[in-house]
Image (tube, rainbow, N blue to C red; front, top):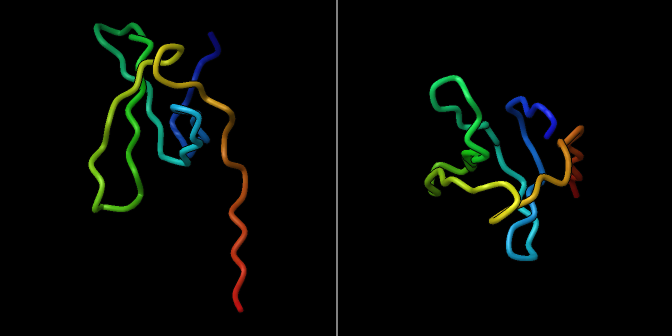
Length: 69
């Protein structure tokens, strides 16, 4: 498994794509295979997922494009 550094990632969960802040969870210095997803919207609570079972990382978000009308 590749080393995952924290950042904004696209995560596939239950056939839905979530864009969220992701951090790998470590216990005793070793990776647990779990990630903590922290939404940028404070109305939503952080949650944890197990990679491979619950979710899959699609890729890192590289750019944000905003369109103003």
